[in-house]
Length: 287
Ligand SMILES: C[N+](C)(C)CCCC[C@H](N)C(=O)O
Image (cartoon, rainbow, N blue to C red; front, side):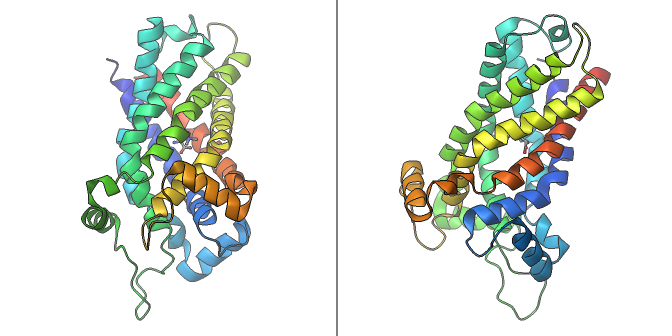
């Protein structure tokens, strides 16, 4: 099994992640809290109350886990293509796989990575939603003191299954949309690359950026539901399941609720995924 694809997936994911985390925090807050009027209002409030550090809440776990999650995604994707088309990463430039195969391999990667991602994503979302400023004396202490404390208290209060709260919504979000992710990337790369050649850096950046946007725009409705399911159960259980969460969110807030955070998601997705694909391609070429 080509191991370097897993390594390339990890490093490229970590680079993208640091870049996009501040956007991600704003997105999560807009999706799950009603105190903010919009992107700018949310940014200003985070900065005033929590300083620049507020934007980086919940980042350490994703960085530690991206190794696992992105290497599963890219490794399973590439190895599924190998199984489907019997071509290695290098050979695929001269013998490109069909888009159907790319889609199936992307969905497979997306499906499997969701299970690895679920507990880390849950902890990230819970920490991002803590609005208390760090290290301030006198104010009420936050519920979770850090990622390990958060994991331990979820485990204690909600059991091992508590760590997988929202995992089903996450799987539904990621399976088709990671198929879309890789198909968009391949379509754009092939469009702008002469046959048999490697795509240029500019092409990889643009194709990666748009792949991120296409994937996130289609993922946003279930992203909102996922985040809400993950925040559920802190005080009392509000939702019975994914469908119930969808229905009551629409009832209370109208269909627009499914696009909460779509602008900020797309703004984040372009640079994050441009960098992810560029480093992935380069690491594999050197490797
Ligand atoms: C499928 N979904 C849209 C959720 C993610 C697609 C891109 C994944 C990338 N690590 C990122 O964080 O942007």
